[in-house]
Image (cartoon, rainbow, N blue to C red; front, side, top):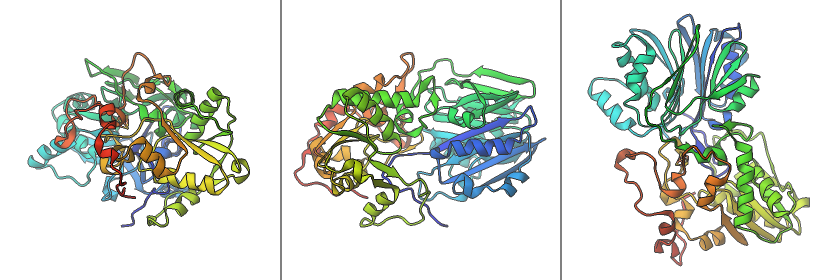
Length: 494
Ligand code: SF4
């Protein structure tokens, strides 16, 4: 099987986007879902799929690749039905296989069930282990199949799919935004902490569920509201119903959705992603001021922070890096020597704007530091006299168990080196991260709780998966870890 890679840039990957369409007006549900998936492509580029429901008959088309690679006018035309569920996925696992593509469709005694999932169940292993010992056979490694087995079993003892799901939801832990299709219903569910987004829209009388509001905008649907954490919405021919299934809800929305994952034109849980990024840029300027001639953002998300930094500092915003929009995915993983070339393919320097300038370069995060180092070298080669690197998030220190592919701690540059060592490694004249305490000030809601565990080590769940222990030290304590003050730099993978 061909393996793809997104290693042009050293970035954290989101794992999925979901979309659902319930037609009441004569729209083509599959085509609407296809357009919706286009708008959610940034959430997953490894595989995608659409399942449609035509009076209980399910047709599904899915495969490895981008939406425009997997779908053409012929296969979309064959997907006739009044309800549709779509999914885009990035896999964090190298053994990702076709069977893992979603939506997952199954036939069982009560008809058919289709599931699309964004997030990660922190107790998936235990649930799967138990099911396997009871005789369940799994074809994929996805969490969605665990939910599928539980739902099918619960449904045989209940009167409706929503009743069955209420039983299933008591067993699920972690992050899940789900779109589920039964023979007659489209269901949206968000986990009680609301780690991953899910919103509800309407086009005439038809209902839409989507990971982000940008997907509603694309099909000209009206945004109704977010599906609330701990809420199940059920859509059928009679309209929409809502069930609040979780009594006590301590919200824990992912802050990295605002910093990097989500599109800037999306609004998540009442907060504009673009506005949050501009505000983060302003806070960064206050926390780490420096004398310079221009502020440059690393496309794409770095641009929004650069706007904020420029506004707060009064230093002019300038385009300095141009993104090649047509790189897509590559089937060739770059060798160590080719990494600089792979960054060049994705981003090129606007030499005229950079030459002879002191540049403040802004990016959303540093993972391993390789991309940063290559970009700084490119800008200096183009004639920049100084590069002051500013990062619009705190240092990555901890893994994410909620559906984001953050590399292991061994690979995270901030875990292994001090601030000064990182500055030297990436070749910057100065380096500053957004302070952890500023995350809550980027315009997030005061009445909500947010997850920042990959930066702070403070996980909002009681138990981490696979026996992992919660960190016992704060970020500040770790920052003084003598391991990070070693004279000799450790070689970091990639
Ligand atoms: S650990 Fe980080 S990436 Fe994962 S949900 Fe929390 S904030 Fe988001």
